[in-house]
Image (cartoon, rainbow, N blue to C red):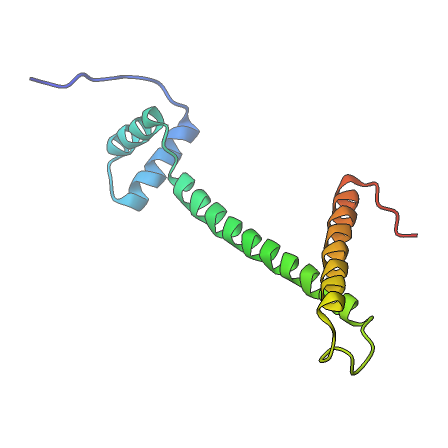
Length: 127
């Protein structure tokens, strides 16, 4: 049993490109045309895998940066709250005062998120 033969016209430029691509892969230009046709019918783009891998790597980097920024904000809020504690009081601080400092840190983080959201929405005014 023989396989069907398909004939179609292409431009001279397309033929030259097809021949160049075939030569690079050490194929005949007919084999290259079959490969292109099959890839197109399958909806597959060879660059797709590279693009997806790059996308995954960038997504991982963005996630790591978001975590680092969140940690930085928490540390900044903690530093700000701890700067209000008089020297020498930190080690002997009563539990009620420690809870108050923790509350200040939580509030600083909350306000930081509000400022971040306002900045992203374009409604933050630094003045």
